[in-house]
Image 1 (cartoon, one colour):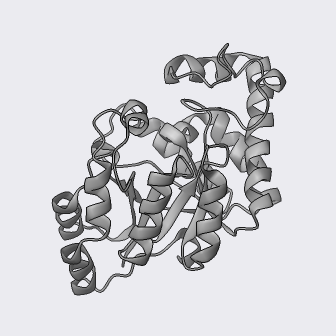
Image 2 (tube, rainbow, N blue to C red):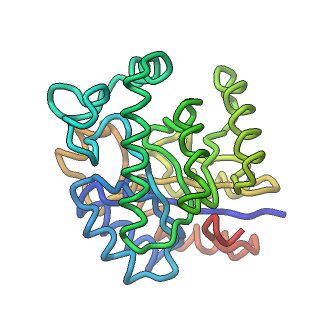
Length: 266
């Protein structure tokens, strides 16, 4: 049995992303979006989501390469002098693992982002993290600790072979999530093509689709801006939106007997 989820990440980052999410859902095959609750356009994203009752919305935890929800003074071990999170993923991960103060601040920030999502009134469809930082065992453990309290139904597994260096972590991650009784996708389509999941590549992936749950993840925008280009150089955000609203993609899904869905539809 084959099931597909088409998700847009970075919902709330800016109006160009939010508009693309709405267009991809209303005029295309986008079925889910991952909300950055501390991002500049988060309120606009929530308002759009409430107008789109069929759009499944999850929490896109942002712990690196962005700004925290809590005041930087409350989480000094996470926030840098600029008040933002680190953009060095490796050093951040090492600090979270070894520094007790960083772990305390990390737990506070993760809880705050969960509480902010709950305050939106939106139903939580899934949880993942910006730059897949929920691969980090400390972050994943904190999410699982909060799962029951905040009604977490599913967590993204960022697995798209070949990933030899990540294989042990992915095995452990899959085991921990399933032991916690949460839903999970079998694979993530686009991990190796982040920001470049264009129409031809989506069609090719659909033709090679395996049994199980495949999540396709996108970073669409209605137009490129200097801020978006600086945040993710080289991303073809407009091309990804075209894939989501593509007639050939919609037609291929119909031919395969597939409807895009959210994790809560599994």
